[in-house]
Image (cartoon, rainbow, N blue to C red; front, side, top):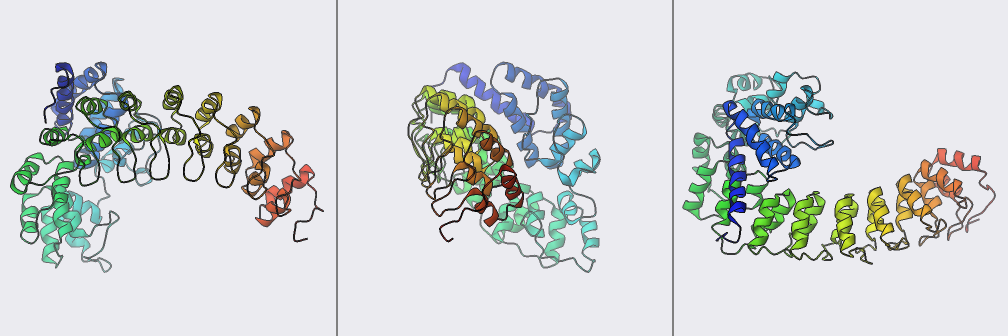
Length: 504
């Protein structure tokens, strides 16, 4: 399809981004200074942001772990020159990279347990020496033969990755180990062939193709691992299509544009029931999102779970992509498969900036999910303090409850979310509200061992002797649920011991 709707500058920016990601796959130490300079320029031009560059290097290094030393060196250079900072609590896909960055004081996070006592060279090895995983990863067939002599060794064992030894060797492109396993009666299956397209070893592929046919899964795996020449050969020979996420999730922009330029409908669904916009919104590639929207991408498409692009942007905290989709007329009141709208996603994930934008759009009306929860209930469940405050300030109904008549105060009391409870009480929420069983928030806090909330509600004069529909007091409920420390606390408060429930 023609992408002429974009300006020359926008097309140029897309081209720069594509060329940048291609550089990252080359793993050539001599070009690290060039990559660092290009990264700074792209960030200065707002083509990529800090979070995106962290995500790109993390994901590419995950798919290319044999070159971990290169990606660690590149990352360290970017951090040392203050070009990139790693967000706190960032979840690394490539855990060896995380460990190496912590070891060299580039990231202040928790070292993955398996790398705690490892030095840098051991981290770069990915797996400990003298292990099956190490042999298969680095194609050390000689050591694998020695391990096979041990009494407990089994050729048909499944590793922690869920694959057997032969499939793992195929995935790593380890030809010597693969042939050794074949010689010991390992069987090639369709799954072996599919995994071979990750490893891209010609001999392994040749052996697997003798018994099984190439499928779209094979093509997707080749694209995920950036084996683009082979991928194009498969497309030309078999006419297979490939998924959007095989390109964008692994930052294979070359194949993304290949697919985009060979479709007639920009809203076409792939085999995963995703459109290009859905996947771009998940990842937060704002330039790609803008490109798609300007060429007619529909904001009202949804995936298998009926999640819309705007919901994916919120879920993954991609503010710029969210803004672009919203500006292009996305229906922020559309519901997913459980009745959630965009504001509920924002409340769940504590996206205060996005919540404020939705408040401006009057998105906090009486929308509830299929269980009766509104955005304030969801914010309370996830202890999203900023979002809860913003929603109440904007006039959301604090008394809306779910099917059990639990409003946000009940939910926060159950979760010991003291800050949320304080917000409700300070804004005038009824401290003695009853759920469908006649329980109060104080009773719920007692059953859930929410000590901070129990003490706070007592200070705010909650009735510690209130009874439920069955005549139960908080003391009875705590005793019934074996909450011994709560029972002691309630007795210290002076809770009555002589009240009888409906059963006497």
